Image (cartoon, rainbow, N blue to C red; front, side, top):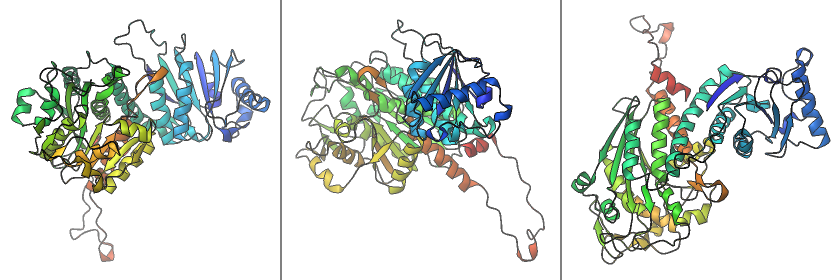
Length: 536
């Protein structure tokens, strides 16, 4: 499916041949749909649409103030589209646009809809944040998982045209959204794969495919290398599985090598039985989603490959299964992490923190500007925040604020959680430097406190996505979160770093002379990379 940006008005949209014309109507437009007074010159199709909008609202059949309210009409006179769908978007805030498009996804995916035109009215037609929200949501609406389900009918939709007030003005925001959407789609696809397909080896293969793009390289560390690195905590989790563990190391270099990278660490437990502390059978199939942290890191690198921002990023994916077996780690075992700290494994179902702690120790070699780990870590976070917001734990206030703001911009929300030292008291062990679990209270926080012991002195954040990485029920499947949050954070950071690196203009000397030499330095044209960074 292709998504195209186009300058459209009510008048030109009426002339677009399509199977579906989706008109996004904000409540502020009641009865006077946007377009500066061109009504005298408008064509019959535009007049028909305008009259339709007014009559539908006056009759009460359509209420744009009600988010997601729909009214469908076929064969509207003087309108080229076969079907017209009015969609209420309330105040047309980005989050509301996302929800409205999600609710209308079934209309876009209907059999026979090959081309759809989506017309934004009012502020949504000219606001960059709204355009990005629409582009991401429309891309998500067209997603269909078929890799292991060939009986699933293919979506007929081949093209969506997004109509805005000015294509030229919105193009940069639109392209950024498409890049992020590509990353989200990859994360969803990997998350949805069954565990016998999405093995640690398969994740490594995906990373190698990403490395074909400009600026990306990859190393895959197999078991022998993990042993050499003394990653005893990671290997303890892996030893019960027949699948070999992999530490996948990705590098994206979009800035000079001297610029410290941001390190992303994604939990890659490709199936979690709980190990010897085995989980209940009900719902265990969903433990294929326990690698969604890893999927989000790979999704970020997909987006980086497309957008090429001026920033350096390292991705680390410790990938393994957590299985019971004759060689599996047992409750009460003591393992030695890469940091040298020993850990008493009281519960083998708290395995994610064991693989992450060694990856966090490994991250130190890159002398990072910040480290962010992403993990479906605790059921306690699901209880605390549900499926709306991811838990954000951070040792640095500025990093926490930047992540929260990025989540707001991406409609991929987070909520800051506490990290008081007192929460770590329950991790004490009689037989090791620490235990891998504390009591039942504040389980999401104590898990984060465990990870903090390995996070070093750099700014560190932990995103617990156990409630947001996938959905259950009728809409079952991976969400691709928090790729949007992470990419908005990285793109914002790239823009800030590019601004800092730009040469500062020297103030003029007294008397108006530019310099001692009396000459102004020649201005070199901006590089493609810098131009791209400015667009983000």
